Image (tube, rainbow, N blue to C red; front, side, top):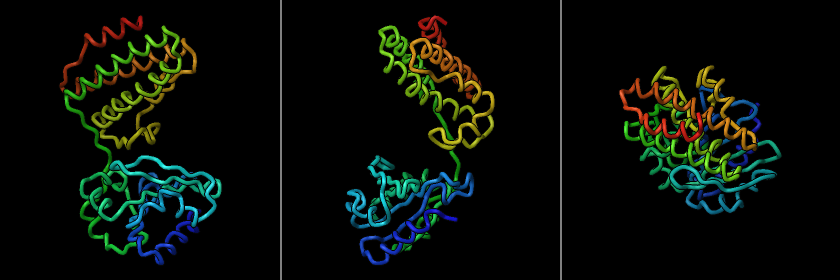
Length: 275
């Protein structure tokens, strides 16, 4: 049973009587054929309208049910989306765009990564069917990185090894932990994505989604050692483990791609950490 059927029904009824609303398109897990929606999935909607303001002010979402939580978040193409929890457990995300904004996002590929695994046109006064079939192609994430980008990422990572260690020595626990478990992990994720794709053509999704399924047992096992408690010694331990995993992956990547490896940078960071 679709727990969002009532909310979708109210939104579609509103669309039929609101000349501003030109199309409503569902995206995300409820429309995917791979890794289908489950009981925890949200409802993601493009609201194509000539008047976006009521959607972002919160006026329109309140028409469709009891809103327990509601806020605005940045989204694709520099736009915004209204994210709401209806009735305690119904998570509905609404990206309101003008027809011009939506069509530009589709034509320029900005919308590709949120629509390439599936979409469903729920309401359409713009006859978007052919337009979307022309521009949106089903695809998986295929990361790539030039040698310059690869070297820059690695040097950035090693630089922030030293930066985080200095924060620890100063007693700046928060700053050090945010570096190790946030900034560093963003670089580690890029390396893992590229490694798994290049090694086995694995679909690596985006932003770490389903990483426990596609990263491989060995990497997942090592990841369990790479995150820290809010404790100086544990942060240093996690920093060193993150360094070890990152180096192993990026060295193998460099071999596979025929890229040079910044050995001196790695030696410098490793020595600073006392490894």
